[in-house]
Image (cartoon, rainbow, N blue to C red; front, side, top):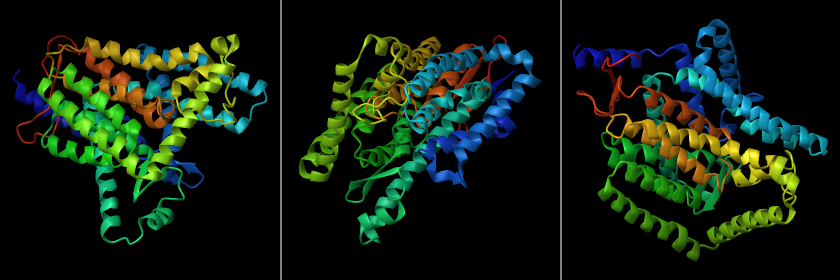
Length: 427
């Protein structure tokens, strides 16, 4: 059977997603673009919560209607079980200590997104859906970059008072934070870095131009964590692909960006320098408090949800949060997804065509783990959703290296990803 019919069949397959696929696609676009979810509120409930509830109900229906497929759900169900085993005792512990119930529930609510793992696993069991997830990740990143740059351009050309414009349009939402000079931070900008990793590793048509666009937008966020985590992730991705010349170029560009936006600008702008000093002080105070107050109980079971650190409920470092709330078991649990992704990525043969796609997911997960040291993205739906997608995307790519070939170009459009089956063994 020649390759051409296979490519046509793959294109048809990509054009006709199942209802569950459509639900997945809508959900991840909202997650990747919607920041913390407050921008898409529909009445009293955010759209994110509605989609989350629908995904859970679909998961239950699939388990009832297709019990023969439960074996394929062993891993996601195990992940959910371990999540509950580690986190529910911390919930009970916090309530028994008399900690503030709304604070406790807010903490748990952020990490409850783990419950969606069986649904994501069901959808991402085919390479076609892995490709769709990659394309939607890219599209979300480019959309965020273009929207941010257009807003900055508007402030420079037609808006007389950028600060007043920000306060009137964005200042009422906790999703945004003013950086000064009209620049601002948005929680969803995490996907600028993730999109840059995908662009560099996949090398689709016009990828250099798009990467430059996203890189400029990322730098203008003035967010140290984003710049550092993206630079490290891109460097690791290029090294894994053995692209040494682009790696040297990327290191040079990263050094320039890091100097300008991490060293020079804070030295000439007191507002930026002040924000960073306060941020550094908060993290150091949290660390000192934990070192002074850690006991054997903290190491073994943690201090429970809602237990304050320096009279603050929020801890900026996810791993410090996990240790303080759940002890070493919590840290081990939140490191487990990275280990799983690493195992699956290691099983994808370097000479397979899907290696670049697998590298995109794995190194973007590495980016989130680096970023979550300074901002709690890993235990938040913004970053956690992508990590769950990566686990099952990488599992699919690692399971069928001999029967699936993923080409990143097509005869008509180099921006399309085409899947062709080689009929070497069973799918």
